[in-house]
Length: 121
Image (cartoon, rainbow, N blue to C red; front, side, top):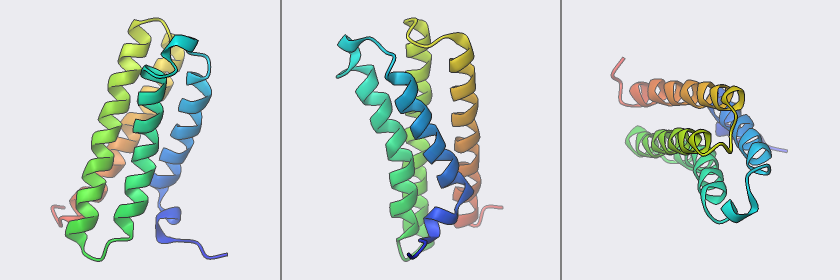
């Protein structure tokens, strides 16, 4: 089986772990949030990995950079939903802090990759 370039990226693998954690923790959210915050945070987290993968398939660094920027924006969206979930009591402080730190770390990795692709080192 072939391993694609994006699968070798540390940031993609970290985001993949985040997706799994988001899915597990949102499984405990209230049933009436299934089409609300649960769906939104799951979609935002999977968007991080999907945009990294799609971006790395592009031919130019400019195109790759655009998808990495979209992925970064999805990280910020996840952080937004983590804050709201914590505010509403769906997420306890320990899980909130753990997921927030992981998401912030991924956003920092994406920012570094974005700079490299734009040669702003």
